[in-house]
Image (cartoon, rainbow over all chains, first blue to last red; front, side, top):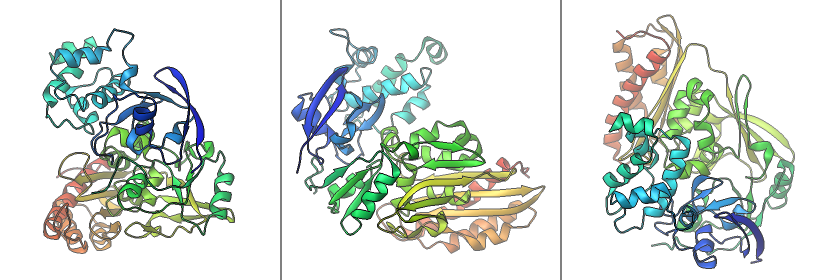
Length: 161
Length: 296
């Protein structure tokens, strides 16, 4: 099968890479670009651990052909921290014990960034609903929800605390 | 078990930028195993697990003509419009609440960011969550090919499990939803094991109210037959009548008798029959109230 060159922005940097039409985005990210923060779970769109942001919106990299992201912008978990300074959600996850085995964490945090951008005042119900496609097999949901809640805007925190 | 980590089969990939380019490709490769890639959330899963063969893959996501929703006496939704795009629209939430409820009941946000409305229709699953609401609103499909176009009611489009009347050189370019009747009340209801699940049963109802009378109605159920099923006899009980509690109860009972569910991994036929009665009753009440009808 013929390889085609695609160009896209990965975590703020322009990348050019040759891919085959049947290459999945997750495998290009992990095995060609060596960013292993994105995890492979079910491969069928059930678990959410392979979530990346495509032009800022969560999508599943195990069901995305790499060739289709030509000209687009991808953010993985590696793209959230500013140098050594972790993203507020990453800090909140650590602080609240929301990282247990850590496998679901990248997908959880990326989905949560999209939620808070869309709805900075998200209530607990809204958080649970938005995050429902990201499964945690350690079942540490309580801590995860708590961490995300801590990152909602001040106004909302005043209401829920 | 299947290997879901890689896509092993090889195919040729096209990314047309206009609809006519896409239709040319479909025409040229109509005798080959050609598939359209919209969201990919069903297609890639089927390629991984069922090994469905694809020789030519046409990605329609870069065709600007089909990426928009036109708001003009109803809705015209292009084939590349994502489900999440629709759920964020005020017009969808306010004027077509059953569609809004159907979409937001589906899967996870990441899936809804990828998947399209037209994809959900063309996948023709008996459990498709957007199909009952769209039938309630009288949606039509614009089907185009190199040779021309036709507009057909969604109700006539799906012919069986995963099967539609779409010809091999055709593509559904748009869903056309007419403007709702002014006193239409509509609602969607779905039962799954957990949120985001595929439905044991899903259904949508619409009641057009004229004073205390149900002027017209539609009761449409999914996951109870090889395709979405309209409970015509149940509708007949309500049509043209003064709406009362006992009438809704008997319509719900009739709807549960009309469905032909099967036993499968998600539920048993027996349970589905019981469940349908309760769900239709509840959803009719909600729709009647939304139509402005009074609760007695």
